Amino acid sequence: MRKKIIVGNWKMNKSVEESAKLATELVAACKGQAFSDKVDIGIAPTYLALDRVAGIVKGSPVKLAAQDAHWENQGAFTSKISVDMLKALGVTYVILGHSEPRTLFGETDANVNKKTVKVLAEGLIPIVCVGETLAEREGNITEKVVGTQVRAAYQGVSALDAAKTVIAYEPVWAIGTGRTASDDQAQAVHKYIRGLLKEMYGSEVAEVVRIQYGGSMKAENAAGLLTQPDVDGGLIGGASLKVDSFLGIIKAA
Ligand code: PGA
Image (cartoon, helix red, strand yellow):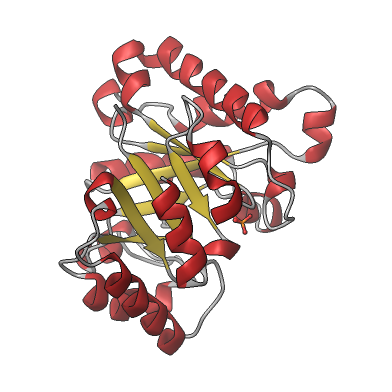
């Protein structure tokens, strides 16, 4: 049985103070709860708030996630943050290839691959995001698009390392739109991705890799999605910004 994993992606939201407040509330809400052992929980504040939030979640079931990372250790890479730096703060997960960097800031499959390799080399867990646009879905090329993204991200990644990764299937048309993929739509793509992993790495690896769904997941629709056989968790944007709605999803998981 794969353990469910729910990660909140705070994106470019909340000041350091606001992040500290939300993290404190979440840690308090998770304390002593039976679900804390059954679900892996993560939050990805802005880089600015990581240090502060790290101190708050320390020793709690809530793990720290970063929204991106660069593949070099240091140097002349203005605006970037290295995996080393994240590791020093106690970060567990690194979100890579999210559709916003892909569509708004020119993130490429090749870069996502370099980042995935680096994050794994440093012993952190990459959350590799993939997903099709509405035009691609309507053009019936969802599997082709998602398949290309998965294959590219895992170039040169060993089976041993691949087994440690998390994939987030996030249809671009469902992100922040209030339009969620139906349970069946999500399951179909998750099943396709698992099949692809089996082709690439064999069934043992395919069976352990957790595949999250992301895109307007909220407490109200989480149970339906999370009971699909190949949906192993959620990457949550909007609904992770309030403790009640995020907790509702964690409880559903
Ligand atoms: P959303 O975002 O839950 O606000 O749709 C999900 C994501 O981008 O990870």
